[in-house]
Amino acid sequence: MRRRSSLRTRLVRGLGAATAAAALASGAAGCGGGAAAGEPASGRVTVGGVSNDVARQAELNVPVVESLRAQLPAAVRERGELVIGVGALPDGVPPLAYVGSDRQTLTGAEPDLGRLVAATLGLKPVVRNSTQEDVFAGIDSGRVDVAFTNVSVTEERKKKYEFASYRRDELGFEVLKDSAWNFGGDFRRLAGRNVAVGSGTQQERILLEWQKKLQAEGRDFNVKYYPDAGSTHLALRGKKVDISFAPSPVIAYHATRTASGDAPTRRAGSYSGAGESLQGLIGATARKDSGLAKPVAAAINHLIDNGQYRKLLAAWNLSEEAVTISEVNPPGLR
Image (tube, rainbow, N blue to C red):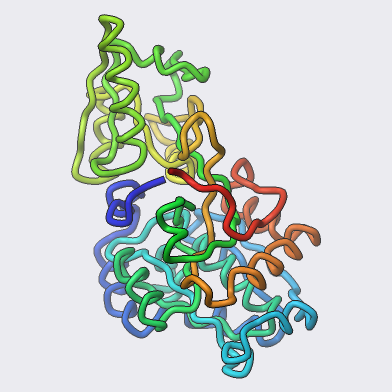
């Protein structure tokens, strides 16, 4: 869905300076701390905790599945920890990953799923927060076992990493709630509109391809760039742009946050992050041949089967991105 360096541009800068500072302070040591990080040892995981009202909190009992634990690489099983990489620095990326209202716990759909997987495998989760670039460096160096950080599965990345898919890679269109515009699966409906998109992202690539096709037909739309998601939302509110093209989790988050305000927004359609010919997938990411993708996928499938995966996504208002099965190294964007 995006290039490695683009997470910051694509995701919401929804936390205040104090929270961002807390994230920076805790990133090197790993901030999964507090009660949430310790719960899996006792078979309980809190999802949606300390979310600052972004999520609906739920307490889940998560017993160890010994048959899945046995699939782990011996070194990880004997260590008893799963080091989970999340790229939420510097400002947090709600609802996927950000420092919670207690100013220390990394919360969000991504670390919550990592904790559920760790609990299922009988491992203590150690959540390490960094920039997106440093997550990949951590995997490469062995400091991180597996990343849950909104990484799209691509054929190029599969040369270096192995994946266990866990969410649909969906892009979306955000408009003001009173707008009559809808995507309807037809990019030609963008003609004559002002469309905001993050620079260097997968959605920018798709948007510019559509623009070329429209220009060949004698029509066009305006592409607008803003330094961050907050600026994009201000432009949408002020009607400087008609549409924002962004990852669906961002749109779901922002629509929820603006629902009671004077300029509520809504999602006006979606599009696969891998393009029209392939449903894109987000995958837990480990070093190639680490032996982790298979047990992680098995743990996710267990959570799908027992309903806890659905409860996690529902807590974070991401149910529309659910997958029915976690696959090891599924077809990716080319």
